[in-house]
Structure formats: C-alpha cells, structure tokens
Image (cartoon, rainbow, N blue to C red):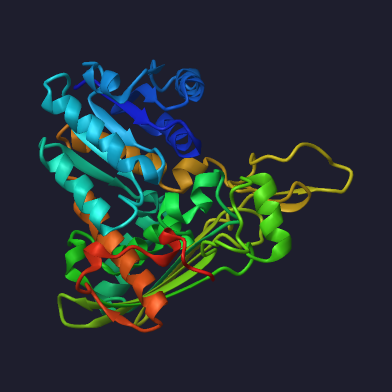
Length: 412
C-alpha cells in the first residue's frame, strides 16, 4: 500500500479550512503544509490540520520553500483570484530551477479571472509537465453523483437522454472584502459562483462514463444585476462590514446572475442548461440546488432540505456563527442543519479523488482544460449580458475580453 500523498495549501482562509475539515474523509493524502502571505493565519490553518489529525502540517515562509520540501508532493491552490498567476509562477520557477518536485497541482475555481489569465496558468503548468486537477466540489457532491447515476441508469436508459438541467448557488455574500471588488476578483457573483452552476448543468446532461465534450455548448445568454448591495442602505452596510474602499453606489459588482446555455449532444439532440447565482439570497444560509428533466423522469436536490432542523425561541440568545450551515443568516426560529458540510458539498469527494489522481491510481475527472472551458463560458456570459443578446460559443476574441465589472466601468 502506497503512503499518503503529502499535500500543501496555498491560502489559509475560509476555503482552505473547508478542505482541511473535508480531509477527515481522505485516506490517500495528508495535509503537511500551508503558506499564506499572513504567516499567523497560515500557522492557524496548519494547527487546525494537526488538531483534526489529518496531517502534521506546518506553516512555510514562502511557496518556494514549500515546493522545495520533499514531503510536499502536491499543491492545492486556494488563494485569492488576483494572486493566482504569481502563485503559479513561483511554483513553476521553483521546479524549473531544480529546487523542488511535485506530482500534481489542483486549483480552486475559477481557474483564473479571465480567459487570457486562465490560458497563462495552463501554459505555465504544462511547461513543467504537472498533472492538474480542477477543484469543482459540487461535481463530487454525493447527492449529485447518486442522483445523476441512477437517473441515467434507469430513466435515460429506457426513455431517452435528459434535455433540461438547472442549477443554482445562492447565499448572502462572500466572507472576504476582495471577493466584492471586481478589479481584484475579476467580476461579481457570476465569476465567483457561476463556475459551479454552469459546469454542473453540463455534467448532469452528460452520460456517465462519457466526456463533457459530448455535450457541447453552442450558445450562451447571460444576465447580471446588482439587486441588493447597490441600494444606499446596503451599500453602507457593505462598507462598514467589509471595507471602506467598497462603494456599491458608484462601483458595484453584480450580486445576481443567470445564464442559459444551449447544448448540442453527440447524438444530435438539443439540451438546455439554466443556471443562477446570487449574493442577495435571504434564507437560512448557503443553498445549493439542482434539477434534471427527461422524457419520463426528473431529479431534484436542495442542500437545505437536509432532514435535520432545530428550533430556537426568542429566549435563546448568543453570538452569531455558522455552526448550523455555511453563510448562516439567523440564530432563532426553525433552522435547517447540514451535518458534515464538507462531505455534503463535495469537498471530501474531490480531495479524495485528486489525491488518488496524483498518486496514479485514477484518471482525473476534471483538469485545467475543463477549468479553462468554464472560464470561456463565464466570459461569454458577461459578454452576452453587456451586449444584451445571445452569443454563439465560443465567440471570437474571447481570450482578450475583460468584463466591465472587472474594469470598474459597470454601473449596474
């Protein structure tokens, strides 16, 4: 039996901590390192890994130091979007100088802020021959996997392939200020979360065992809007809670996005994917949902239909937190609880899979090629929203396109 893969994390924030919590269900890898520009937070994330007994993690002074350590065999890129290229450049430079070796590199979504940056990331990694993994947790969510497999094995096998898929991710807004700044993050909620939903509708419409390329996007229609956070009251709330540099009355990012994707399948039929995302959702907390419809069958999933609810009366008072569900919005009343969120949202499944991929035990289900394709779809959706028309995919010049939100010229 091979020893566990030694994994290091770039980034020490909310996302990295979700992965570390997920690692309790991973046997093929150990969390051994964390690097962050904030050394204190890197040390705290490493301490969390040790406390959960998922690896003897330590903080590193630099990315180069982490890559150079023989114990680190793969990197999980979980840093901010605006740091993606410089982080990858340091990894690649360290390898090219012969100072370190890696078996693989996994990157959180989106792969980059726009197509040009995604192409650069992909080219950099290819220059040192690394295996890649695109970290799309919802692809590995147990409910999505089980529902999709059963639906295709029973419904589609007897009455024909599905023709309509829907997916949504909604919550009240991100945790960190940089997410809200289009010039840093690369956009608003479309860039931040549509990467999930756009891939999931395509995944649901793809026959198990066949590549995503058998369900080909041919046209995309996108809409974006700032529905809540550009209102004067909420713009002030955002400045107070996130950053004084944020002024959504003058320079908003979209807090709602919808995308309709028209697909052509390998057997010549037509399929539609509908995806929506929101930072303006008011509810218990993060809500993930998906549906798929075919000639004689359907499937639905809603992460807040967890089967577990708590009720707290007005007399129950305490600090706000996220101990019931991610992005929790209330502490009283009837509250759904999502036990083992990292497992339910697919983090455990993706981390287990990519550890095995980098050990040569499995073929990657998602690579940087898939991440690049998703970014192309997102940028086409932005282009459609700006031009207010449906756009054939892929459009010419999409590798040079930067959304108005990212340029700071979009006014909502």
